[in-house]
Image 1: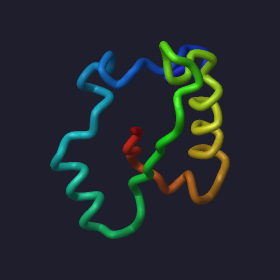
Image 2 (image 1 turned 90 degrees about the horizontal axis):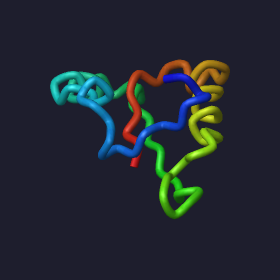
Image 3 (image 1 turned 90 degrees about the vertical axis):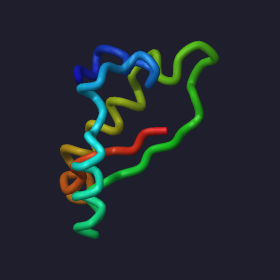
Image 4 (image 1 turned 30 degrees about the horizontal axis):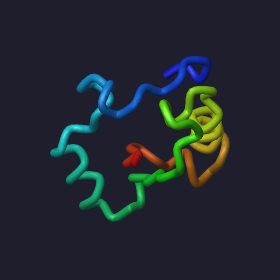
Length: 77
């Protein structure tokens, strides 16, 4: 996803943005911490990240931080 475009709310995401349950089970079974979890307060009352700041920070972490580069899936609440 392009960081210039705000991430849609979960309810607006299409199925391609969701990890299939079988894949999630396989990643969990490995026990190698390849699933990240992100929970944060919405930045506005109508959209969680209209400016895209949170998405850009997440992209930086996943691409530039050694801990982030091992993440294969994210549970984003």
